[in-house]
Image (cartoon, rainbow, N blue to C red):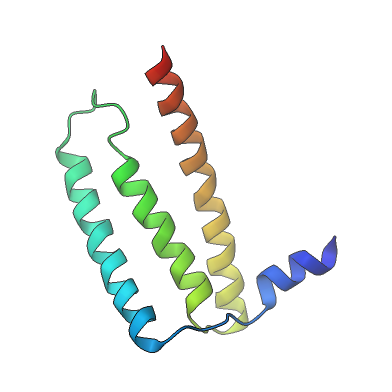
Length: 102
């Protein structure tokens, strides 16, 4: 059990091309900014109005954690942040789905 956890946090990422990494990073930052602006302009009664903010931010953290080289402590920190950020996304998704069915 310890080996897969250690490998997940400490292994170097398999890097894609520089154009992909930075192009997709720019796309995710623009998407997160646009989604945050849109989420703050929607009324609170709109169901699932924060998906547009949570999902791009989760993708941004994931991209930073697994597509760029960082010092070991930063890499572990970003990967922990990525896992932690997935928790509210899953909870929010379940709450929205539950509210749609009732």
